[in-house]
Image 1 (cartoon, rainbow, N blue to C red):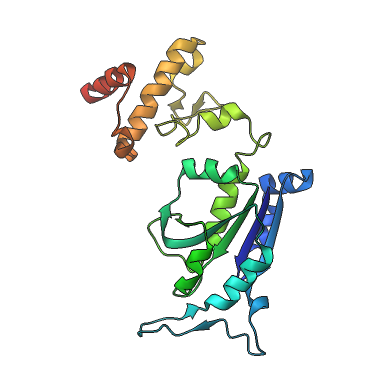
Image 2 (image 1 turned 45 degrees about the horizontal axis):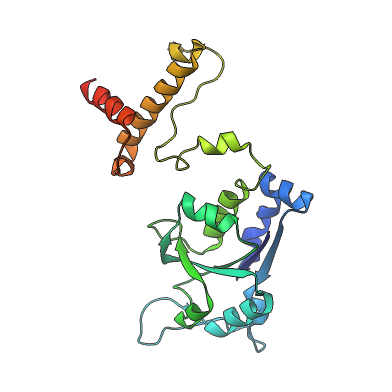
Length: 237
């Protein structure tokens, strides 16, 4: 997979090469990450990359010309181009899977008050990583990189990924490890029983408990009969 990131601040993204999972893919030759400095495509000696918005308003807008020139220089027939913007569709695990299957991904990082909207006909989709504002799209690019890198075959055990939050319709159940007792807090007895069926039922019930507490919206779907029974038990507790 080839990932190309267009940014005005490449120094923010330099740590990407030191992220362990990404480094592993790079070392194996499975991935290529290229960071492209949009400023290199600004004409003239003054590197005039932004300007005030037509119609007035606060802040500065990145000009379309250098962004589109940078995009044209790196885009191929295999490229899927994403503009990272608060106005984009919300990023989720389904989208992470979708992007992880692309042969070549181009991420455009905005900055300041945004980018001239005339770049939009040249992008395939706009994505937001959340309902909040960042100083630039570089942080969002790192989020997307991390989320799709761990879905690559052989990076993380497939069974580990399947049981994570947002892979299933529920948040993940609580996890425990040694020691069995820490400062009076004990590991639930069922996890020590060796009874696989009981453990699976306990994990489902706890996943429902966590989801009900933190993300009840995920339960706005048709639940299985087992889930319905466990939800009833939770309501009675």
